[in-house]
Length: 201
Image 1: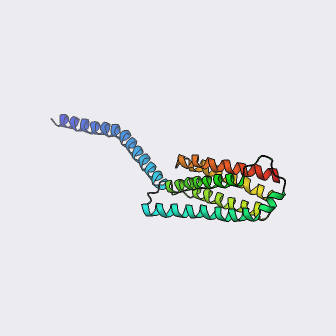
Image 2: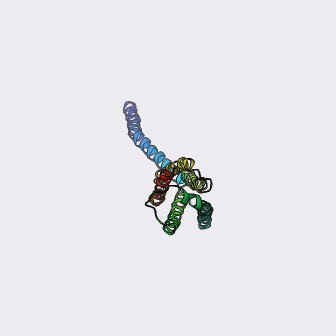
Image 3: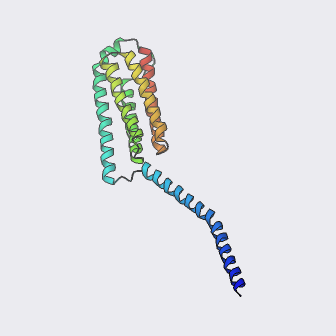
């Protein structure tokens, strides 16, 4: 009787160990899945910023004001340097001032939309920093080329502007693909400005 009881106890212990061994890999897998999900949620919360409507309106307003401000200062600098611009050797094929101004205004607004979408879509600073750097480089190029009459230095600035905007398009894509596509009209405009700069320099 005692021997039979001992055998049942040993069998019970063995069965529990087998059950524990079978459950261990499943528990480990579950823990791995849970950790992976937590990591994904952490990455998403780090990238996506649930901004309030008020914050979105404020951000949009700041971006539009900066874009308009750079455009106005650039237009004043270009107007001041028009006499110098007409005195240098320019390419024979060139659009009129009205066409240039209209296209530039449209491209600037599209670029502002790209900067806003990138800012709204992530907490990461890189897209916004690159977009802001592009805006600053554009202003510096306009002042250097038209106001300071230094096309060689302007050529270096427009090259940096082109690289900065292309990098913005690449960096913004994981967060908002629309922002990337909206950056290409501005890139085309920079390319046109660079070709004009090369022809004059």
